[in-house]
Amino acid sequence: MALLVERTRELERVVEELDQAQQRAELVQVAGALAHDVRNPLNVVGAHVALLLEEARSQGRPTATLELVSAKVGEAEAGLRRFLDLSRPTVLDLKPTALAGLLAGFQGFLRPKCAQAGVELLLSVEPGLPDARADGDALQRCLLDLCLNALQAAPPPRSLLLRAESRRFGVLLSVSDDGPGIPEGLLPSIFTPYASGRAGGTGLGLYSVRRLCRAMGGGIVAGNLHGRGSRFCVWLPAVPAPKEGT
Image (cartoon, rainbow, N blue to C red; front, side):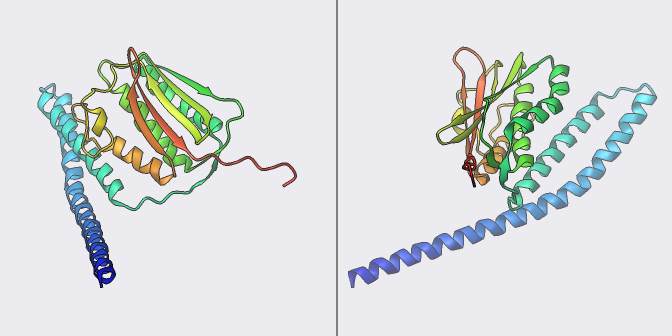
């Protein structure tokens, strides 16, 4: 009898958890629909502000207020776009990915942006690095978010280092900088939604990065370096090299 009661209670807990999961899924769908409904008129507002700003500039009128409105509309659009991305299921194309070529291409893509900010972008790839099981596009989105976060710090770093190396648990990618570092009070919650140490930040970028890393079977951690700067470490599963003769 006691066993039956215990199993009944366990079943009740499972049903309650399923109900809560269903409710959360429905809430995400409703929130996503609401964000979509808000985004459309916001796009129209942004277009009108851009026209007014262009007209004011051509007539030599003050533009400070319009520039502020335009910037805030842009921030709101970016936040809504990020939220809509997060409200959709994560669908990835996981396959063996050669990181040396991917990182070299990413360095070439980001180097002009870094040069514009006066930041040197460095790359270090361990020789003979195994392929990682990853979605190449998703991984580059993660790296872009991490690098842009560093570039937007105040003051910005002098250099950014992308490093890829082999570990027993897989492949480790790190993004290190010599900037001001992560505020100690922010570190415990840095990957949670809406946690941001930057004015105007949505706090969804790093949450999205962690979500993608986990979806690829890996993860991410962050910390400050001794002295100055911060480091974000992404680990991914490695693809074993094929055995000779197979």
